[in-house]
Amino acid sequence: MEVDEFIQFCNQSSTLGSSDRKNCILRSVQDQVILKYIALFTYLALVTLVGVIGNSLILAVYFRRTRKTATIVFIEAIAVTDLLTNILVIPVTYYVLMKSVAIETYLCRIYYFLNYSTSFISVVLLLAVAVVRYRKICLPFAKQVTAKHARLISVGIALLCITLCVPHTIVSGRATVQELPQEGISIYECAIDDYFVESLWTKVVNGFSIFIFLMCCVPVTVMYSKIGIEAQRRRPTYGHGSLQRRDVSESAANSDSVKDHLNCKIQLEKENATSSLSRDNDTSLSEQKPSPLKETRLQREGSSYFYRSQRGAWALNRTTLMLLTISVIYILTNLTTLVLICTRSLIKMKISSLSVLSASIFSICLYLFILNSAVNAIIYIALDRNFRIDCVKLIKGLWQQ
Image (cartoon, rainbow, N blue to C red; front, side, top):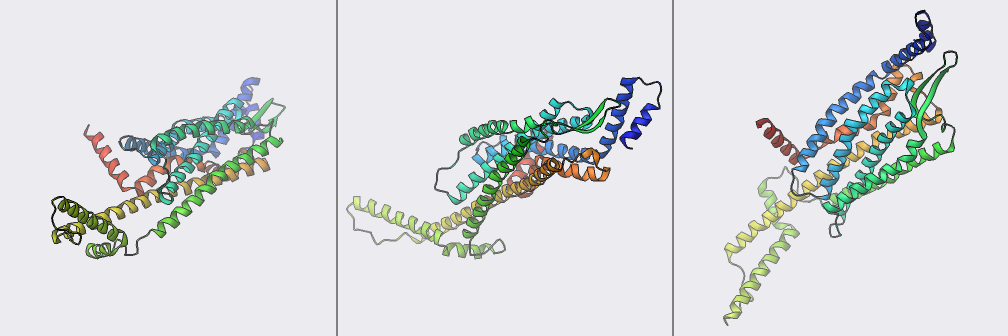
């Protein structure tokens, strides 16, 4: 039904007063708008369900770990931001969409403030994670970010992003969709406020959003590219997991790093033996080599050293892959939302003026960025074996209680 049909329907009720007739029209229009958002409501409900469970699980698992690294601290900060999105931003979104026809300006500004602040915090935290991974892998001997530094950085990021989203909050508000002067009714939706819709300030704010997004996403892309190149350069040339243990052991014995490790051990055995015998005024044993038993022990130690090194490298690569996947999904979903917001602002498009199918597709794409608040736990479970084990232990412990 069109608005004119709603007016005609409400005017047919002779028992309605002037204010009741206005409320009838607004309720009818709002019901039609809600019908266009049913698909979006379903999508947001699924994101909320998965996000609350997943992010609570992430926080429960990582808070239990006694050894905290900068990466873990940033993962916890991202999980807290996502959980706030699930329990605060999405319910506010529900309320705003349910009351959008007669929404107040301050509610729209609260809604946009929460959306922009959580989005900014997430993207800058992902940049911080990329910096930590880059320094750990590409600059291993440089000064690394500690867990204490990461906590201070997380607080600073939150305060900075809350400040940066203030201009967006100012230009946001309610946009007039349709005026009904005969009935004294205006139909609204949350968008760029009518006062700023023709202002240059709106274009500046939108350009600033794009600038922040690019200033975070471009360094993330460059750093993860360099991490991938460095990981490929360090990749062992002696084979993969399909090799038998015996073949790997033979390769380990021939690898330069293990040989250097063994040579250092053998030289240390020589120096210890020489020093001990010299104190007893015995014959110099500078040419003496360790016994065959010691040689065997050192070979076993070298093989163990090799396996430990490779397990650490593989775990490092898995962590980097996990964080890279999260960053790629974040960039793609937020880029989609940012393009739609700018397009909507430029062509002054109103969702309420679209058909049900078009409004459903557009609204889901517009809120695609909220998907990031739910996918992280799925990625951790899929790519992090230790996280899966910790989740199982946690769930078993809760079940036994």
